[in-house]
Length: 589
Image (tube, rainbow, N blue to C red):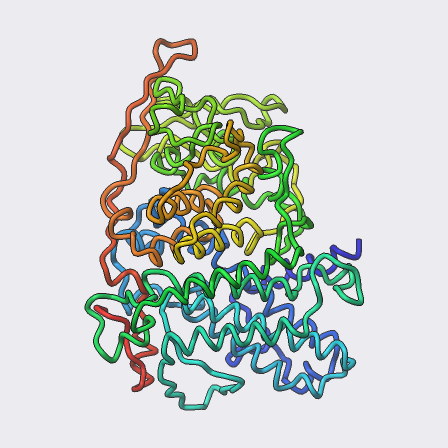
């Protein structure tokens, strides 16, 4: 019961944040003042909880208009709505501009939400010495706040490059602010230095107090979370977009703001070292269970708040978050996001070989048999079994063209625009229209990401052999068969280029729907290639009026996506550029 306390508080704060009520914000009228809040220990902790309440804003499946986020603007998923004013549509249609998309009062946006919470962090740090909290708690909270500040800055980094760094300053509503953008390198250095400082004073993960948190504080930032976020930030920084890549048309002034000026393999080595520090800490382990069913550990990790794999997560009370967003109409879901056929094709066979490999055993006439177990746990395909309230048991979902309730229509306007529904992170024993809930926290950083971070970074240093064990661990947990060579379907002795493509694909399927694809295709600088044109759907035709024989035809008639070079970075809101003369806009906006 103690553990639920922090979860419930977080959920309540999250709900209030969604309504636009900012506790003690610069413009809020809450009846509270800085003096009354920070003179009271309960109110002080409530203020900290407010900062935590937004940590999942980017992951949130209802981030835009209560039913959209960035995953639906990529080649992984199709959005259920098509109105030109929908934020996800603005993103995938190439309509991003400095004058769109930036109203913090209606959506948690790319610029305003991080800076609003950075201000809250700075305010609380400035008031912490006068609070009635004891010395040990103040020290721990200092670490939490510095981690949270780095957390919000890392979203700014991946979306904009170098940004204005506020340090510990607390600006008031009357202050005239003209902060120039810091260089990309300075922004990376600041975030990682904050994480190093926080790591030195925060509790350890997955151990009892006094070295770790007390039970009621589960879900707060830890030393492990600091190390993991540092791994992510350094991986981003080493990537082609930022590692001397920039935007080709970036001016001499803009280039150091949006990337390292020149490429260096040392950035990849730093990223590998940071990931390896997490691995060698032995704080975490993959949630593996291939006894209950192949890949069951992968499926089940998302249905536990407490497990060995979650490094930083947003805890929720018992809920149907994912079922409501992803379930097909027959199960009461909003089907806001449907997986694309090219994502379905990315999953290998159970032997680990790509479906394009003639030795894989893939059968185009029976395409969903003997696939990587993650496929069945991530995607609802035609005839997949899923819980139904009509029978109180698992029955088939019919996605073939013209099927009642859940079927695909060729004009792309039916219940599913792709022939699939999302299943990732859903509990197969409940549905959106059932009365059941499941235990769930949102996975913001988990150990599988760290293994993939290391594999990617170490491969780019030319030490490809060192990437194999990390991929093998992930594939073994997934329920893929080891094969005679125990490589779980991986080709032996791959080149750096071959391994790069394997890692990118592995990251795509392992981290599906976990708020990575939009960032990954941009930092790899492949979005122009993969996120232009039309996503693929599967048009399944049932042979006869009964039976289970079908034909499969790939369709390319979903809405067009547009991704141009300037979209590798987001535009800085024009309101920010206009009020700060020192602000430099990102290239081509």
